[in-house]
Length: 265
Image (cartoon, rainbow, N blue to C red; front, side):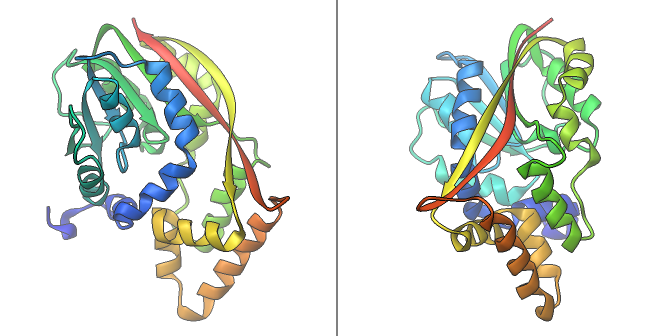
């Protein structure tokens, strides 16, 4: 696809390519737990929304499922294809948005999204689409952020927003509120919600900065858009923020998340 035809969001998320896999590595505990919550079975048809570099898709394929991973960003899909070489069955990846899934009704036995669908511009429509493409009795598993205003994730995106003209969607944290999940997702799925802390362990703030500026679209795009004389200040603010999580021989950064498990009504 011609990059000029992509939305700004697709370009932003896709720009890091394979480097985004380092971000997935830092989330691998929750990604694994969410795949466990779905528990893919051999031969089942599984859809992974916002697949990124394909971690959840590969784990589901490792369990024997037939997996389709979708993402809005061709750069992510190209990385997922490369990183999934050698898997059998190998996941299939294609470009699609959560708000308009190009699949027939009841095409899948299960749907999963690990910190992907939470960035949807139309969350209610995304829920409707997930429910449409999953067969009755099929399963759902989601990983979402469930942070308080003073928690790491909220402060992280607040910091990036201070240096950027493109803050995250206002609905990002709706997916972390039990009341919203029960009202919106619960319309289509019988859900149970499990809270957990996913901790990022890293050796130092420089390592965290390099992982994010190279691998995480919002940070990379913010840094690239700044004039040269402000880039060092952005990096300093980023590293100062993370320095507060020093613990022993490195950093330990706790992040509050939810794992949502459901069955299609």
